[in-house]
Length: 448
Image 1 (cartoon, helix red, strand yellow):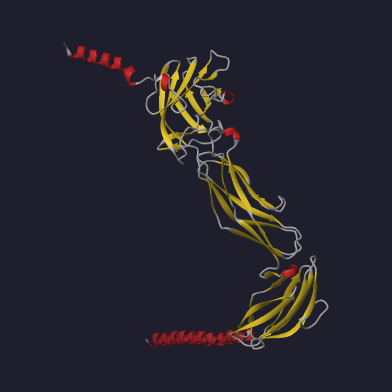
Image 2 (cartoon, rainbow, N blue to C red; image 1 turned 180 degrees about the vertical axis):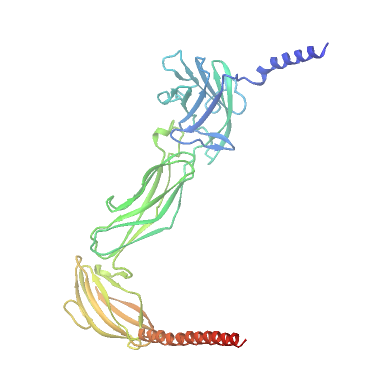
């Protein structure tokens, strides 16, 4: 047998074997995409994921439209189970058939339940979108999964197959943020305060969650960015808080909240064996609102009396300043004020209608009673103390303003003035030395 004859026989033999190596012709280009409704494709080990108990889209793109039936066979493992062994734990089959009025059909219903949502299935040009899912029959083990196979058939010919990871539905939330967000507002004013130190929420499960953030306050007071959103699996979201303050009296307001994550009913195939419809609740960052003057301490006394004072101050020796303290709330209080008289001395104590100390204060919820203390710092490099004793409802509370006393402000100025002549003298001497050197050099050159 000649060389050419052998080549012809070999080519014919290879062509005869091609159908065994590939079931897809050049005209049957197939691509597939799997994802939960409205979500991106999830993958595990490089394969797409289907979450049991949740509706998914399986989008099959097929360029060659010369057929009447397109079928999907989905089964546990690598081979299709025998007909008598098929059940909800191992086999599902769905079909698009142009010969039937409904077009979309579930070939394997279990317990009278269809695992194809025909109303959501659709055909768009060469894309066939099957809205399908499988029953959650998996053990109660978090992140449990199995390896399944999805096959695509055109009429009765297999075109394509793909390994798919099927997972147990898991629901979980986590947070990442400081435990407390603070606000400072001036008493009896209405302002808007925005805090950009946001807190984060993470969906740690494999199903989308409807996230809801609620604080124990009216909606017109606390505003949370994206407080009601759909959070995709394994993703996070950031949330800023804005405070719309009212005309509040002085005091400290603490507001707690809750974060809830729930699976929307439109995602769930059946609730019969679906026990993780919502995630355990979380607490967002607590809110603490300080209604008082800037840099002032706020102390709430019995009988609803609130006292505000400055805790730390800086002064220079010889400096005289006025310090104000504020009393508010409904009730009667007695205020006594004194200093250490070594480093700080009191020059005057006055209020709206009283002088000296102690003072009897009749306080209200609608305004602040202001007491002004004029003090002088008398010893530098020392720490002075100003004391307040506030008595109300039979209880007395003492407060202290600590004052660090620095050198006299005039001394600093004198030191600066003394420094200027010294620097000037140094500069002038340098100039004369340079001039002298230049003159000397010039005279030497003339002698030559």
